[in-house]
Structure formats: structure tokens, C-alpha cells
Image 1 (cartoon, rainbow, N blue to C red):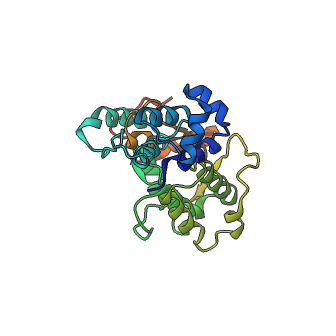
Image 2 (spheres, helix red, strand yellow; image 1 turned 45 degrees about the vertical axis):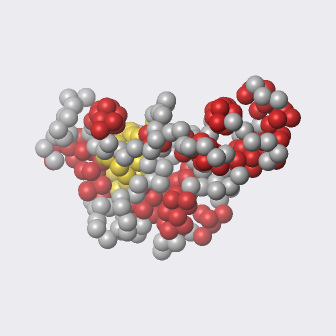
Image 3 (cartoon, rainbow, N blue to C red; image 1 turned 90 degrees about the horizontal axis):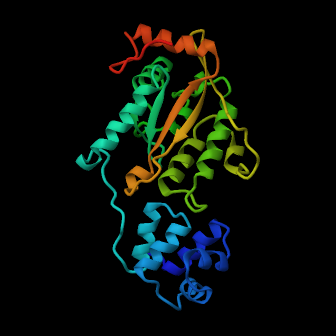
Length: 276
């Protein structure tokens, strides 16, 4: 376990704060903060939590800071199917159902897919990207990069692949990729046909506000863009790391095609909605 002082200094650097700015915001002296960062003083539990709050450190990493300072973790990490999270699961299902007949999914910080709505299952079954020969559990990066996934049906795949790699790296915790995310990213960048330059992308370069994903199969075209939602005030590690990605049609053709798939499947699922 690394020492707490260097960890706090790392987080301060990743947030681009001076010692004076952090000390002022956390209501501690610059001298004491300097002593903590260099290991000359041991912070209290309350001080670790206060500094982590000011630095907006994710809950998992706040637990790491506490352990490094010799304290017990503060935030639980519950299984998503735990009884205590029943209300959250219901909320997630409601959000996914409201997106019908357009795809929506819930993923964790390793990009593993935890839940999908009926439209997402229908759409990826149509693309044939849910085949059993994809390695590991269902994962957004694997589906997009694997030759047997959705990749053959994405007509602007080079643009989408570059945007995804940038996104993975921008979402790095404290400037360092999570071990699981790094492992998945290394795996997919080694797939056949993936351009080597994706390993060297400059994540600081300007990006487009919206990156469309253009699918085509059997003469049917679907042009989507997506939005990502997180839970705003979680006190559980699992919940903070969840992301809800919703796909929205970019034109009337995509909207009609989505409804056609829903009609062929017998409607928009258990939580069907009136066609607009």
C-alpha cells in the first residue's frame, strides 16, 4: 500500500491545485499540508476525508487513501444485485425502459455491460455482435473493436475507434487508467486490423462535441449519437462507477428503422411505449 502523502500530492497535481489553494479550500495550514505530503506528519481520518472531498477523489480511491493512512475504508462496495440497491436497480430499469425503442445500456468502469434495455439486445442481435466467440464478458470495447463484433457494421469505424480510445483515457482516474480498463484497452488494441497509431493518441487534442456512430447491415442504416449519465450523489463505490449510455437517432431514417425492428420483435419490450 503506498503512503498517503504521495497519493494526496498526486491527486492535487491531477487537479492542478497548488498547496495554497488546496489548504485554503480544506481549511488547513499550508505548512501542515506540506508535512502530510512529505510524510513528516500523519493526517487524521477527518483530514483525509476532507482533502479527498475537496480534490473530488472517487470513492474507491478515497478508501485507498484511508487505508494508506492506516484507517478503515469509509465507503462500501455493494454487489449490484444486493437487496440494499433494489431501489437503484428499479431506477436504472426505468431509465432504460424510457429509452425504447432506442438502445441503452449500463456499464461499469471496466466497460463491462451490466444491464441493457430490450432495444439494445434487439439491435446488437440484429448486428450479430453478441456471438459467443467474443472473448470474456459482454464489454463495450470488445464489441466495438473485435472483428466479430459490431465493428464490421460501423461504416465510420476509424472515427469511432479513435473517439473511444480518447474517451477511455480521458476517464482515467487521477490521470492513470484503472487496471481493468487498461487491461481491456490493451486487449482490444491488439485485435487484428486495429491501427497502431491508436496507442499513441494525444488525448489533449480537441474533440468533436458529438461523434456519430453509423451502422449498416442488410441495407439498413442506423445513425446514432450517445449520451452518458452517472449517478450524482452515490455513497457506494459500485454506484459511483456505473454509467448509463443512451443512444439517440440522428435522423428520421434511424428513428423509423428502430421502430421497424421493434415491430418485428413484437413491440418495444415489456415496457412498451406509444409510438411517436
